Image (cartoon, rainbow, N blue to C red; front, top):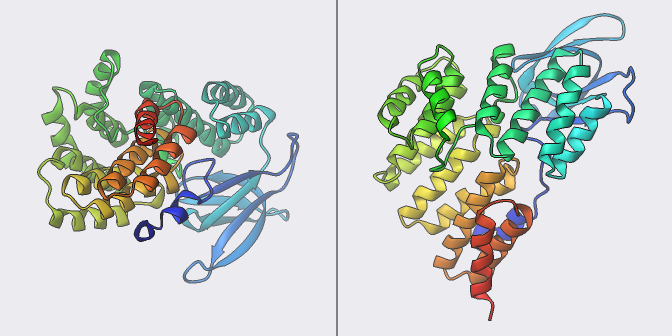
Length: 346
């Protein structure tokens, strides 16, 4: 399966958290410590500069750093590569449990950490991690509520990838659907986007499509591009191969952490159009680059395995199914993958 570079794809290190920013812990105990910010330098961002001091605030636009001498400086957020700081003990425990996929336990620790945390930028990070926990616990209504709290405090949040959109045919519960209908007509674009995403598979589909179309011209390019990608779900059955060029261009414009769902839809559509090789390449980007999106990664692995089978690459298909079973055992799709591997066993 050299054409896919499958071995290279399947053996990339996994990220513990979403997005491209690396956040690390300076000390085991919670004590006063100097914050460290690694900043990209040079015209193309090829260099690395280490800045130290106290982080006063960190939004999707800027990081405000106070040096030891008391001088404040503003660093563009898109230049920030890594932040090293000191977390409270429950924050640290939450991160450890999150990495171990113990999301209910991590959520409890993040709740405790919020009550202890005084730094606004760290509290917002905790909100983002809580939203991820709710997503992994299949509680999108609570994930949405937490995420909307996050974007209310920082509309430019660097944790926008925590937004609980759906990219599959998942159906919202009755109570959640009622709340979504309210959000669809609210004056908050992220709420509109979440609502339209989930209502695409309900009797509110027409209203959802209309809302998504209106959002494609929104001033926030993240909202506009995600809305455009969400519309692909309504176009999957009629899209043509020539449309895939435009879809890829939209994905390339999206901030890198927001590309998981669009890649899944692209891969699924390429599969329907009969381009299995391109479909596999698109699908495998999800588990390799965006493994924090656990449900999407599982969906992509199953779909990629099926495409590999169509190409007669049964050994590679088996590897993909085993990856799904091992890495995402909580997924309903793991049982389907297990059946596939059983059927292929001599």
